[in-house]
Image (cartoon, rainbow, N blue to C red; front, side, top):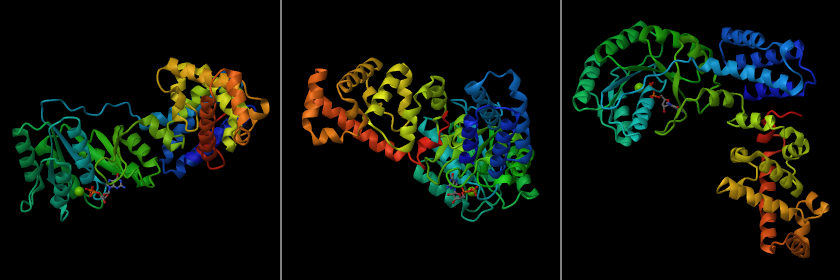
Length: 440
Ligand code: GDP
Ligand code: MG
């Protein structure tokens, strides 16, 4: 999906003029990609209409600005789809906050319970787990094992068969012991059935959770819409945790679940281990879905700063070629960017190591390196530093010419080699840099 939408957006930047036809073609590509990613059909339709409505081609300025407005409209619509604007429950200190997990069997409830408990425990909350799953054989053992590993107190029973009774007992016990976060794990069924929903309602009535969390398997695709709706109706959950986002989850399920229930996603599960739980960030989720990593902010900024003046540099980097002059040009850009230069650290291959320390120190270091490189000949700058290796007198000449030392010149050359190596792996066809939208 990411690649497709991204390609569509990049194609957009290549179009000389953006008219109705180009916009339609772009939206068609994006909608096709969203559908392929299992986003609900109605939502895709809505996105298309909203983008069309929010972009008035006649009122836009020309060229690059026009393209940027359309890109932004698409991104904004996607952000909105995964962000219902509802705040999830915030636990209160020195009080018992009861969480109840609901969801189908295999969704990842038990695993997520322990992850969540561990998350709060690490933040200093007094946390405990209650196993109210009497349906699945071995459910208590599973929770017990996880909880023991994470050093979290737990409650459950091998003999009691009434989940409502266990839930009640466990919560009462931990409340009496002044626990602050009490997480109740419930059983699931393979399908959404009346029996499961009835059990959920009874447990909920007994423990009166402050927050009910719907745990959903992130890989279920188009089924997400219906499943999320059914659980919202039966359990009226306040928030969602999407699991298995580390595997082949396409992201469409998450979008559908949020849109169908107006409930926020609070965390995503990214693996089977205790620490594989990440806070959900709508913007970063959308960016990742678009295959843009977390670099899109930066890309936007860089574009705004008219870095695209420097087309040759980008082209060289994208093709994996990198000369000393390219490094010089990058230094020039970095020194122009000021505080933003720190951000450049998030683009691998950007020579920002020398920016370590304060902004001022970094700036000085860069200036000094550029000064040294000013003593290089054009031929040397356009090459790949091999001439310096073959002929050491060149190093001595540059050091003299710039009033610095041989050691410093050698330092620059070795730095250059590291960057060139990085650029080689970054650029090229499959390289990360070629998946960023840049003006041609
Ligand atoms: P429950 O039936 O809802 O309690 O689901 P479980 O917690 O027992 O999880 C079912 C399976 O999914 C187990 O094998 C878990 O290890 C696995 N699982 C849960 N969350 C994640 C996740 O975020 N990523 C991956 N890869 N596997 C997960
Ligand atoms: Mg379970």
